[in-house]
Length: 278
Image (cartoon, rainbow, N blue to C red; front, side, top):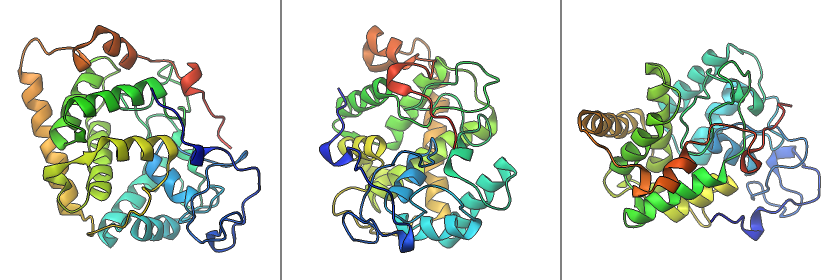
């Protein structure tokens, strides 16, 4: 089962936001988990950038160029992909000046049902979703990855997404593409230049999702661009289409217990407590 590492325990201090410096470590991009009052989103990628000071550590007063710069510096995305994601996010929110990370929790803007590690909102008309990872869902993802040999590949993402979507509210075409793309980018960035073929270590993915922290000693070995992201997303889409064409799909992890775990719909479960947007 998931257990937060000692490094992810809350450090009792207030952030120094000057140049993103962590006052404890004294380093510009040192890791510091969210503090009381910090604004965070359901997106672990952006939360990680805030925890490392690429975005404001309090998760507030973020503009378009802040998003673009942080995606390029933190994850080595191409300028085009970073701009595309930033424009898309701002456009979905219809928030064209400054935003807080918690704004991204508005349900069915960018955030969507059938997340791999977040429960669906309890009611379809809820305004905000939880920003915390649901540990039973994360545990099920890790178990699936270990059953695949310890690495999450794009084919594995397709299998997990297919089974998750079977038990959640239906996604429209746009949010289906967002759901596929977010995993393609995460695996593409953290897994390295050959991630489209080799995938990503499930342990690395687990720690990134749970702690919202860059892997220790990790450095990007390539620029993640639009074309590679489209290629990886297409892999997931095609494999999901193949699975949908098949009959008698087994339940996730071949286990009724895990299938039940992944059907968690309520964000009010103890492992997925809602955060009130700041």
